Amino acid sequence: MAREQLAVLNALDVAKTQWYHFTTIVIAGMGFFTDAYDLFCISLVTKLLGRIYYTKPGAPKPGTLPPNVAAAVNGVALCGTLAGQLFFGWLGDKLGRKKVYGITLILMIICSVASGLSFGRSANGTIATLCFFRFWLGFGIGGDYPLSATIMSEYANKKTRGRFIAAVFAMQGFGILAGGFVALIVSSAFDHKFKAPTYHENAAASLPPQADYIWRIILMFGAIPAALTFYWRMKMPETARYTALVAKNAKLAAADMSKVLNLELEVEEEKVERIAQKPSNSFGLFSKEFAKRHGLHLLGTTSTWFLLDIAFYSQNLFQKDVFSAINWIPPAATMNAIHEVFRIARAQTLIALCSTVPGYWFTVLFIDYWGRFFIQMMGFFFMTVFMFAIAIPYHHWTLKPNRIGFVVMYSLTFFFANFGPNATTFVVPAEIFPARLRSTCHGISAAAGKAGAIIGAFGFLYAAQNTDPNKTDAGYPPGIGVRWSLIALGVINFIGMGFTLLIPEAKGTSLEELSGENVDESDEEKAASARTPPV
Image (tube, rainbow, N blue to C red; front, side, top):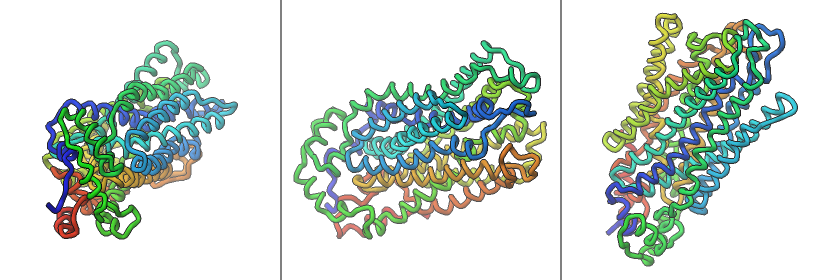
């Protein structure tokens, strides 16, 4: 045979869906639940932080975070995530997926709690402490991306692999939703206990001292789901593909998977050694051979994730600003500090419940029928359509009778982001690269995405400002306005369709066939043809 497949890997490829598949989804998925909660819950409390630490006595409006502070608070976790994706992605290929998996979780638990305990002698001191811990929180979150995707990919069978990896990522939707629910519950409880007038009625009394606890409780809650899954992560065996193809320990791979699959598997030490000597299983990341075989694939996964996250994160992190622009959230001065948190959380929870969460699970349902390529292309297309449909007649949507229509259109962009490239950009890099480079390449792809998220998060703060200097937020220069910002995001989504053409289809194919591992030179031309991106 031209391609030698180990019996243990073949057993995983053809295994029927079993209990261990679902436990892996839950264990890996709860990490993603925590990741999403921790990354997105900050957008629920930034308005409150502005009121607490930057309100000036006698000012006509409540305080807001200065531009540089807002950029730091919103973006520092994303910077940490980018660094973590690169570092832990590389480490996952060097030390093994399981060994590194526990480290990321411990870091997330410690930093979630520490973020809520941020203190300082001044406002800037407290914010600096918060940013420090959120950077390291992001660093741990970053490791979860390549490791969770790679572990699920290497455990799954080839028939339903896409569905399983997408299900892990879909837990991100529940994490976003949980952040909204926690904020609603906490703010409601405080609003009921500590009655306060609006800022217009009494500026000082509109901010009860107890409001300082709200943002701390919301941030610290993220440690709970992470802590609950730590024990189960540590009990997971290393993936057979890492143990056999990277660590080259055929005996341990067979023993581990025999327990998982409840099968007696042959130990193939000679075959493992023979496979390890093949040229297709030895080239490095920075080699000409990698560039020849996978260079376009890596360009495809990095560019599409980069472009997608510019749009996705700029929308997610700044939903509250868009809702304010169409008067869905009342002016800050007409609310007290606690009620403002409630209104922002309610708006974001509605979007998550109606569009974000369903979009993820539509991907889970259809990805192994329609394929990754089709769903990603479709998602980018409809994101482009709905973004332009919102942006071009933007004034129409700001009129009171049309606000519900705006929310529907805005929700549809999120639906097709998640029933589209937000899910597939996570799935594909875990399938198409060799086992010894899989975690690294997924980390590089994810880091490119976070670079896009940073551009979206930082850039949107300035770009979405009103063109009239008298109508900008305090401390911000005039921008291009929300309308032109949304048009720019629509163009970015359109470009994403073009780079999707570089993505190969992975539906129903084994990981070794996709990556070209274990292929003899005589069969290389056929393998290369199988990996050609669809057109």
